[in-house]
Image (cartoon, rainbow, N blue to C red; front, side, top):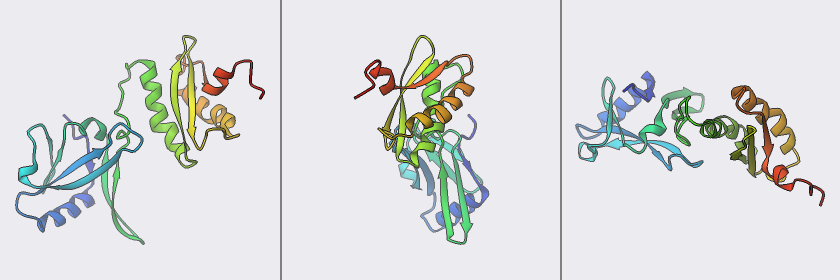
Length: 195
């Protein structure tokens, strides 16, 4: 299995320094809290010898090992741990693009691939506005029905966001598979859109 996690050289040095002050045999553990949800967070902790489980995956680096529990593993695909120093000081950065949702394969059902695209590409863009989108269904005609939540709900910009951003992005990505993207409320309201 390839190393799912990239730990940059600066981060490796940082961990090696920290581990040098810990009891002999201490390594690090990389994990995801609330994996597969919008609240997923990637974390790192010390991992003493006695805390290693037989089901853990061990990734060996030059001066230490990183252990990952079975549950977190699929959500840490393509994750990167870096140690960045800038004017504000030094900090560890953890990027785990698949923590909120595990990566789906190219031959997965369309609904799973669209769902993944929404969670990993569309929602991060909407998060700045406090909103998010959920895929409700994909109709036989290839129309993806999505529901807006959070700050997008009832926002007058929804239609623009949907048409200009989300629909364009998804139709381009799933060319030939999706025919349109519609808002669930628009879809439900049907004839009665005037209140």
